[in-house]
Image (cartoon, helix red, strand yellow):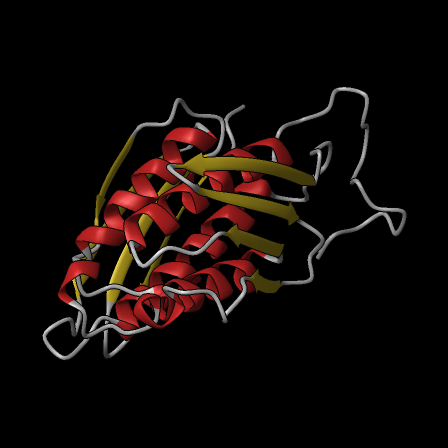
Amino acid sequence: MQRKAEKERSSKETKIKISLTIDGSGESKINSGIGFLDHMLELFAFWGKFDLYVETKESDLKIDMHHTNEDLGIVLGQVFKEALGDKAGINRNGFASFPMEDVTANVTVDISGRGSYNLNVDTRQEGFSELVDPSTEAKEHYDLTYANHFFESFAQHLGMNLNIKIDPLTPDLHATLEPVFKALGKALGEAVQIDPRRKGVPSTKGIID
């Protein structure tokens, strides 16, 4: 039986629909209206082997991308949580490391039911200020601050402990975030896999909220 779900979120700012098959092949069709994030989510789905379909029917992107970006994280977390059901038999945790050029991203996840997000970067490194300045054209109008909002919303609504470490930083947002999304796909793909030796929920409490 495939683990799959579909969720739709409607608000005054956005209307977003996401369909997910956890045990997929990495196929995706993503149209959020945020081109950079679409590409990152395609990489996430490919490396996690998730079939992922995202449609933004309405949004206030003419104002800015804040609501659409955050709501995408919310709905993605919700659809994963629903597709996982009671989480019986899953590995629960996963880790992946992915390089791109001189940047390496390390991502650790734990589907514990307690959503939290932490980004470990050295803000003193050269290039950090460029990564958090959305006015720079080279970053395709996306930046690390938007990415943080997306990751936090995703983690909170899935109930996932998500820790990301990026080293070193580079002013190139693409080279910074591409390995993060690839590693997140691989780490989450490992965490949601079924361990045939595990007969119940992977928690000494017997439940994961």
